[in-house]
Length: 211
Image (cartoon, rainbow, N blue to C red; front, side, top):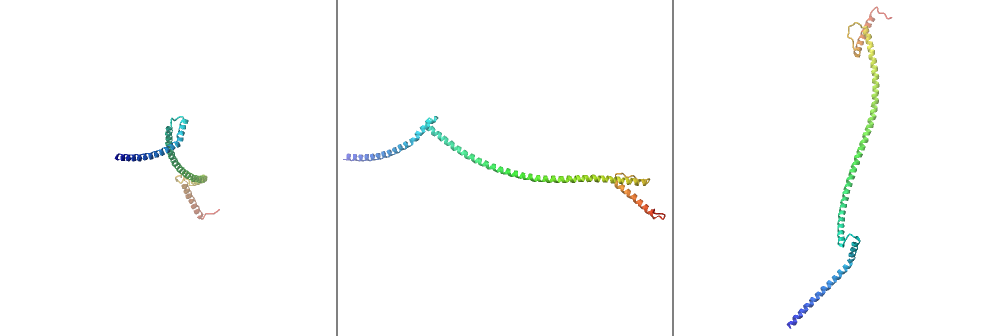
């Protein structure tokens, strides 16, 4: 009886193990079927990759294609980053160029305005220069006329002085230089004053008679 009881327990245990194994088999079968469906579904990609390998002529298997794809993907990412960096640099350079251009335009406008003012001053100075040249020409002409008149006056003074000297000959006075017109005039004035005095005295004489 004990042996039968142990065998029943063993059978029960084996039946429980069998049920567990059957459940595990069902689960594994279900998972196998799912994997099979996924393999079948993804099989088109494998076939596509095989066709790519055959068509390319430069790859031996799909792994090389995927490796090449990963490399190109990394290169694309790097190029995209470099492109973004270059765009940022271009934008900064463009902003600097715009700023420099504005500064140059402002500087050019300032110099143009300064040049216009200087040109206006130059035109005004040239006009004034023409006026002063005209005045200077007039002054030169007037000076020439005055010089000629002064020479004539000096010549007349010298002639009168010489006439006076002839009448006052023998007085022993020191001769006056011909170019010293003021002394010549003083001498003439002195002689004229003497002559006027003599005439006045002559007029007061009783024997004076006006013809």
